[in-house]
Length: 332
Image (cartoon, rainbow, N blue to C red; front, side, top):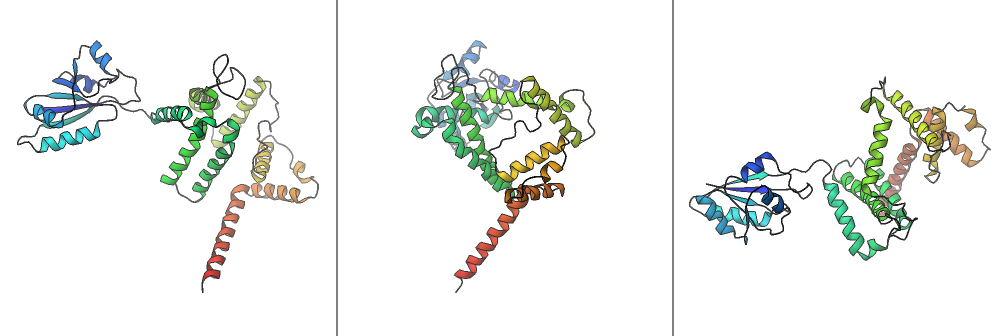
């Protein structure tokens, strides 16, 4: 006979089971060691009787040898218990067949639900996380963004990049969690005004709507000839969005002036160039060191290069040479 283990995901709404799982639940006695399993009410409503028992690996293995038993696993998978059941089954003269039937599967992005829960708990129970504000988190947001950049420059596209992206995602989640505390007529957080809150779902909804709106060649009937036209359409749509909000129609509207100076100059030149601004505007700056740097940024862009990346590459080479010099100095 057989032991059928039905697993479920905590990230899928209770009651949603795959057809194979419903079939498995009708093949024999159904047991679980989890009295508060979220699926129990739904199975009871569907007429599936589930017995809550004290987990006993040996007893479960022996009963499965003479009849079909269905084990509804806890949502963490009951891994330790099932490992013990496997050892107990192997020790029998005629071990039962053990089959695992996934009752529900995680969809792409499902682990983000875990991050929401972890962030909620940290905000409630961790003294450090509880005292943070949007302002206090700013240095971490900038730092994590640069750590992602450094990892990419190093070509570490595997686990290191995954880890750094996770750290950056945490910052997005943290700010959204702070904003969530301001929801409602009065709000509960120390920052912002009453009712100006939002949550991570609002953040996700906003970027989804923006991406769909700015990609009519994907989500509508617009046809484009290539990437350049996609960029032109993007800027046209963005300008229309700003106008609809009553914001400045300047092509430079929305450029963050607090970013590093080299990337700021590059973005200003790039935006103005797309709008057809004459090159002479950049050539009439007062003859200062800053103006010379600005002109060099323009020349670098005209050569089809990224000024920020070029300067960063030079800085990395300089660091290598300094380290080489230090190593030589330490050599007896």
